[in-house]
Every structure is written in C-alpha cells, then in structure tokens.
Amino acid sequence: MPLELICPAGNLMSLKAAIDNGADAVYMGFRDNTNARAFPGLNFDDAQAAEGLRYAHERGRRVLLALNTYPQPDSWARWTHAVDRAAKLGMDAVILADAGLMRYAVKNHPQLRLHLSVQGSATSYEAINFYREHYGIRRAVLPRVLSLPQVENVVKHTEAEIELFGFGGLCVMVEGRCLLSSYCTGESPNSAGVCSPAKAVQWKETPSGLESRLNGVLLDRYGKDEKAGYPTLCKGRFEVAGETYYAIEEPTSLNTLDLLPEMLAMGIAAIKIEGRQRSPAYVAQVTKVWRAAIDAVKKNAAGFKPTQAWQAELNKLSEGQSHTLGAYHRPWK
Amino acid sequence: MLNLAVPNVLGALIGRLPTLPPSLAFSLLANRVLWPALKELDYAPLIGRRYAIRVKDLGLVLRFTVTPRGFAPDSGAPALVISASARDFLLLISRREDPDTLFFSRRLVSEGDTELGLVVKNLLDALDPGSLLRRLPAPLAHAARRLIAV
Image 1 (cartoon, each protein chain N blue to C red):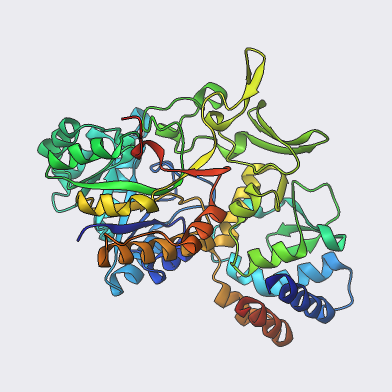
Image 2 (tube, one colour):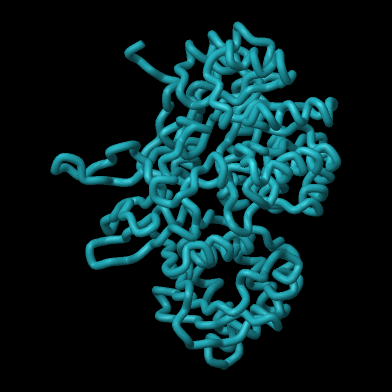
C-alpha cells in the first residue's frame, strides 16, 4: 500500500490522537537517549509502549520504534537491550541508524523488521542496498536533501521501501552527522538524543526582546512580534562580517502537500510527519489534514489540489515564518 | 466565535471558584484533579520546585510548589514562570492548541528552568483529559465540558 501515513507519538495521548485521526502507523521512542527525541518527560516506558501497541493493533495500525541514536562503547548494552525490549513487546519495526545495532538485531531477532533511520544518512541507492544486502532492511527513510528526481532515481534502483518526510520542522539536514550543538554543550544529537539539551537552554524576556541561549551562547533575540523558533544553534541569528542574520539556516517547516501526486506516482511507500516533541493537539491536527490529503490524492491524483483549509491548519502549527518544499523542489535543476 | 465563547466559560469557571486566595484555591483544585493523575506518571522531577502561573490579562499569579503529598501554595522565588492569557491557557487545557504553537507565536512565555518547563509540558501532555474531567467538582466539570465542546 503506497503513501502510508506515519505519525509521531511522544506519549500515549499523542499515539491515540494519531491513531484516532487516521495514522497508518506511529513511531515512538523509549524513555532514554536511544532515540533522537530524548527530552525529559517524553517517550514511553515498557508498560506505556505495551498499551500503545495494544491500542494500535486493535485498530489494525502499526507501531514503529525509533532506536536511531548511535550507541557509545560504555553503554552499548542499553541499545542492545532496547532492541531486545522492542522484539519482546512486539514492535512492528525498529528504526535503526547504527550498523552494529542492525547486526545485533539480525543475529538475535531475525523476525524483527528493520527500517533504516534518516539518522543513517543514506542518500544513495548504493548505500541503501548495502544495508539491505547485509542487514535485510525493509525500508529506508531518506534524508531531506534530495530533489524529487533524485528520490525517484533511488526508488527505481532499490527493493527497499522508501519513506519520505512530508511535514515538520527542518534543520541543517546532515542527519546522523551533525555535531553543531556539541560545540556549545558537549552533547550531539547522534549520541545524546537531542540537538539542544533542555538543561543548557535559557529563555529570557529582556528590554530588547526574547532571548534564547544555549549554554550561555546567545542564539537569537526575537523582537516583539517576531515568531520564535526552537533554540538550536543551526537556527540562530549571528553577526557575521558586520551583518546579523540566519547565518546557517532559517527556521522553517517542510510542507509537501503539493507534491503528493508525484510521490504517489513514483511509488513512495510512506510519508513521515515530524514532531515527537509536540503535543497531542499538534498530532491530532496534523494527522487529520494529512489523512484527508492522502485519501484525496489516492482517489484522484490528476485532480488533486491541497485545500486552503489544510494549508491554513498546517501553517498555524509550523515552526518559523514560512513553509517550504525543501530540497524536493529545485526549479533550477 | 471562539473569542467570545471562551471568556464566557472562563467567567463561569472563576465565578464558581471558592473565595480563597487564588494560589490556595488552585492548589486545592490541583490536588483533587491533577495530583491523582500525576501520581501515575513520573512526577518526581516536579517535587520541591516552586512554580508561578501568570494569567496576564487577569493580573492573576498563582504561586505554588509540589511536595511528595501534592500541591501547596508557596510564594518563594519560582524556578519556572509560565505566562499566557486566560484564553490561551484554556485553549491549552482543552487540548485545542499545541504549546509549541503558542510558544512560537509568543502567546505562551516560559521563563526560568527550561528543563523543568519541558518536564511540566510533557507531563501535562501525557495526562488523559477524560480522567481529569471525572475528578472535577460537578459544576466545574460541566463548565469544562462546555469549554471543550465549543
């Protein structure tokens, strides 16, 4: 079935919101740094995960577990234990980035379905086929750096299902290889599970605006009516050669509703919605729009046009000032 | 429609609050409604910290702490201050707005310990609104149901 809708679940309420509003599958993480949304108070313990699986399976939906950070030598057992827990709980798939962990999963839980995480940073069909040949991965989540023709080329040359990001916050998109935050905090998302550890983040209202700091480093100062963004280094405004601007990346959200007909035609298996850190209200609202859009494009791809109501709803929920088609759309190519 | 409907319900809610200092009234209500639900979650990081909720348009500040036995008024310097309008707090409580959405649009301001703020946000997100409603005193539950149904 093409264009499955994969929605984020930071907790049980979000999981239920996603399922109730039409997600085909949800993805979640355990309550530690084995996943890339390791925020305090977020994610699932085993009992909550079991309850989420029950809720989803009773309704014919699936649950995927993100185990997409890179194990460290001194805590390797935490990650392998997480794979064991996933298998025992009956997860429908685990989303992995680390080849060592894939090897462990294949050897110890051959029945467990493996997806290659976006954190695996595989952008070519050669890389994806390597993971498929060696570890039998069934699906790959593509990094958000390829244009649609490049995505199509990947799809044509691999047996692995391809999952694309459809909506949500964007970053500098060197997923799995970004060390930017570690320059400020000593922690990178690849091993610690977050770009900006909450303990290092400070927000302060000042006479000149709302300031965000990461371990003391000023990331941004928002004027009175400016929309704020996540406090990450890549989305900060910095003074470079006498000019203050988004020197690395402008905070913006990906929204690919317009591209659904092309994605359907090229055989994209699944669309992923970003945002396990967001609330059940966000999950419900985004899932509802995307369910309606995917149903509409499957019914009539030629006549598909996103409604203004869908776009307005998604705009309201987005980070940053604007929406973009990201790298998928490169008119100069 | 929303702009008009919510403050009306808010007025009804406030009108039904007991005539106690607001921070004490809040703590009593939170102990009845929130505390049993929080105890089923990982609430330990909340203990021993001081909080302030600032309802900007009403000029109302609720100051409290969380002890191992529940919520209690506390006027000491808060570790976390959360500010928004009455309407936006109600939109949040009724799950009709996402806290990040309100934060990005500057309608919700969180100051102080960011990590504690995230713990609070994630714990509130994890609560089941249905089970909270069942613990509300009948008149408040009625008002809250009307609010959520608006």
